Length: 191
Length: 73
Image 1 (cartoon, chains in turn yellow, orange):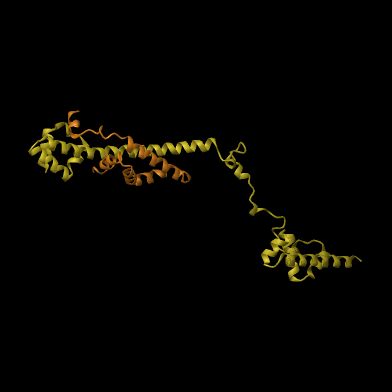
Image 2 (cartoon, each protein chain N blue to C red; image 1 turned 180 degrees about the horizontal axis):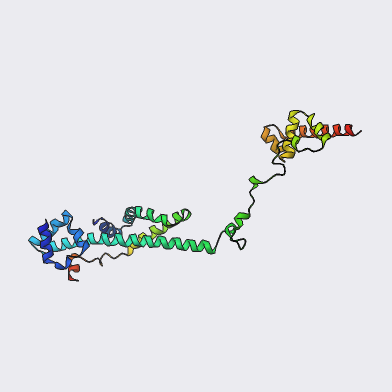
């Protein structure tokens, strides 16, 4: 087969340096075409050889053309979208001050809201008034718990009810009753 | 080799072959998508496919030189 290739190049010396021709002739199907053409040259065989090469050469050219075009187009597309988002930032990404902070940094996080008594979990630890503390101690565990949630954690009756999975009315009732008890104990102490 | 030649040639008359050409270049398109951010990839994919169809329609088959044209150069 090598003799065929060198014979071909002897006839067409200009094709020798060409990479496309080289890869074309290295395929056995094409070698047959070349062989047929060199043995008995005819217009028909020349045409067939030419057509096969055209197809081969087209694939190479088209593939490389499309590949580089797609690459450059992607790069340009990215550049374009970047530029666009830089010039038209979303409201929250807008610059808020000179130091480069954006508005999104200023949005408060409700989860990390620091409550006044986060360090405490029960009223027992917060109440400073001795009489009130004594009164508080006389309440039932359930009443204490509800008051803790309502005044230390600052939850509403509805939220407490959802937490303890009882009705809001029940919580409100216990809540009010506990306050009334505290009040009466304090009044008794004063009198 | 020569498969694309046939596909593009057929695509001039039958747009179904354009789909086949796109499928051939699918890996290349997928790879190109990494050049942009995740949220823009779907847009880019569509853009690239439109581009590819343009190329298939506009690429001239006649301008491809034959073996003996190259020899004469």
